[in-house]
Image (cartoon, rainbow, N blue to C red; front, side):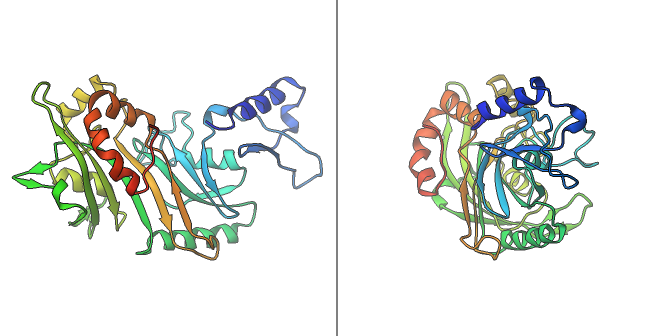
Length: 312
């Protein structure tokens, strides 16, 4: 993570240079140390920050930040995500990293990774609420695009239908939410590359997905409906396939779904718009390089054309 030496240095200072805990307030970092002053005095005070809980900030503006969410971290605490168990959610991690009040504009599943957009403000709650609303509306605009990368079971063929040969195509299929209420859901898919190896039985594809709506587990459920579930998806996937890929090194809570690029039109809080990329996560790249290198090789040109970046 960029800036780790700075984080460790500040942590060392607060631990070992005589700063009393009763005098500490907030010390936040964004690629360089910053100091927050107490509203009740002009003195500078510090608070210990565990560098493990800080996150990489891919992009930051006066009113927004895009964090690089790692897999197996929930976005926020709620009854739905289960007990805290001392886990620090992304909401708190982003807040502690940039040193400002934040709201998440969207969510990613715990097992997913990639771009996570947040609004932020220093103390003005009205400004934060307004910015959150404006960015939320922009994200739902037809001009906004979220490009996900998924690794799925299957070579991209279903009942003689070749998904790869279709280019971008849409699935328009309603989805029930957590309360059983059915809502319209539309996702564009592009099956970029796939393999069906006879020697070891590996069948897998790399897929791009662009949801037009934001329903519960929408991409995961639409892909499962195409009989190409995402690797690691214990809710909508295939248990035997997941066990096989766990044996190949897929982490336990990992779903092979990564938000690789987020694009928003200009707003009054983001006058230049937003276009930020998160490189395909290391654990997904490991699976591609080690177990299905022919898929990665075939996909490279298409990924670059779509603005998806990865470490070569």
